[in-house]
Length: 301
Length: 301
Image (cartoon, rainbow over all chains, first blue to last red; front, side):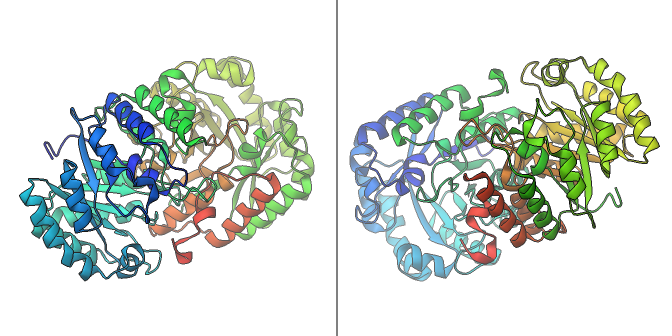
């Protein structure tokens, strides 16, 4: 990260948001969204994932997207589930690879079909590949605040996974509340624990709104010193089969909150809302984001 | 308030939630909801409003509801827009009257068709009526964090209105973010200002989620010392004509958050979720609340 004190909003709609959408979003539309997001000030984008087309058909155009995506001023970060994906992402010119493991054994097995230690075993080859191609690697820890299968996840388990990543050279650790189980007190404690035990590692929060309190968790993270947040345009993500089920926090709602507090996000809120409306048009359904419905304060109540 | 340190969740779905619902909810259904809410631990209920049936047809059964509502262990608080309403509410056995004025002149005129000073002028007669009938009076200040017509509302204006209420004997002041314009920094500052200038007055926060950050505002209020919150079952409120437009904060989401943090709300979350589902059935549409969709943590992801 260039400057840990600046607020960084990582836009994850193209990957975490779209991956659960059944209807394929055309490569043209993905590129139009990337272009418009860049125009609204987005600098860090989780652009796609080099994952099996069978597992995630929505992202089967990862190589095309990367080949044609606007470059200037954007970090195209790409999630990779394994060495094969990492090689493809590096070849495609990813600006950063994102590797991930769950802090919960049960979730890791459900998510990628193998144990945490098997996931970790593949990391060495990914990190050495990344080193050869001079590609930075960041890491995300899923179920960092609780697991739908296992229940509570001890912070010591989360820290142990993080240390494995940092030891291998990860330049950022994302704590992901994969199914929206965190609460603000827990976020405060976990972040403080990380700041104490891994003080030199850039920390990112990735929050899901399954239980309606993700924005309070984000605010707790901000108060505890987090300066990097994953958010998703329009609040997409989660499962589109559940009516109104919440996904990620909406980028534009988060930007509204932080900017209202006098925090500089580097984003143009009005432009972001326009991109959220474009996304709504592309997905042809109302999105969970609220600011796109109520408007920023300038437009009244 | 019996004990200012205990968390009090005031349930406002019956009044603020239902008042904007076009289809009339039968008195039987209102009573069923009140009963079920009491069973889930609700002790403070904004039960109805004695307002003109022309202005708010949904609440035209205020007297019937009050006559038949379960009594044991519940404070039936009733909103009154004027002396006539106050008399009717006191006659109906309201346990507390709720009067209200906007901190913004423009909003007060739009809301009740008269100036703030005209609204205030009627307060004396309401407070003396309440004294005669030994009914406590609490007060709500609308647009306390911003006005859709006027824009920013200086905290000094909000405090000035609050002083008028306290001087007349209001035993609680509610700061209402009527159209969801507040941010956590502002909530922190406003609450601190009130704690400094009106240290002996019980303060309540009433938040709307128009811009997706109300739960962060609630958490900021909690950190600043607020122990009384207005919330609405299922998150109803706001304008049902706008698809997925947010209303109040959902009671069950708020209870989930506070209980997850180890704060005792006195509520039974599982029972609350059942009542929210009953409400969803009565209103025959999906409600904004999230915990009712994802379930509490015990039920998994």
